[in-house]
Amino acid sequence: MDGLPIEIIDYEDRYKQALEDISLPWLLEYDLLEPVDLEMLADPHRFVAGGGRVLLARAGDEIVGMVMLELQGEGVCEALKFGVKEEYRRRGIGTALMEAVLQAARDAGQKTMVITSNHQLKDALRIYEKFGFAYVTYSDKWFQLSDVRMEREL
Image 1 (tube, one colour):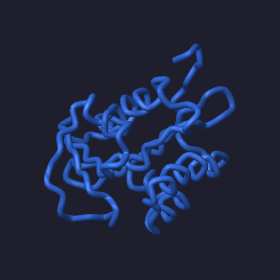
Image 2 (spheres, helix red, strand yellow):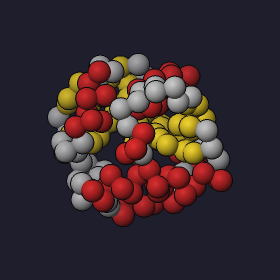
Image 3 (tube, helix red, strand yellow):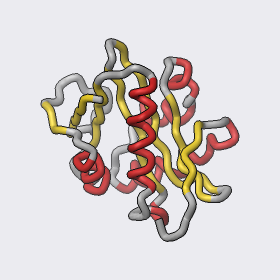
Image 4 (cartoon, one colour):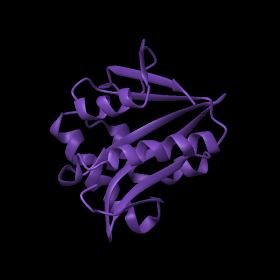
């Protein structure tokens, strides 16, 4: 990873601004920002309270990537708000975050992970494919602008 030591840590309130700093640029760039996104970024504790996790990638003192894990019941979970700051992309950080969120889901006893995304997010889709996520029919949309749904067994 270019000699950049990356540590995957759990969310703490002092990193709240980092959630927006990571998510808002790509949501705005691809015109994908919705009110529900802002609700999630404003209240990351709702994921933790439900048994999920908010995982952050830290490089030195800077938070450079994130992913949220939401437990949805019956062994199904979803990875949300997966992102890496643009200047840190293509250094293996997304891979490290995906490995961590998959392990966190297994640790929580989950059986299936779901990801919803948008066809424009090519880099993210490549990572999901690399980790064995398969495209499935998408009907019950939580995000209006999501048009891709992928799943994999854990």
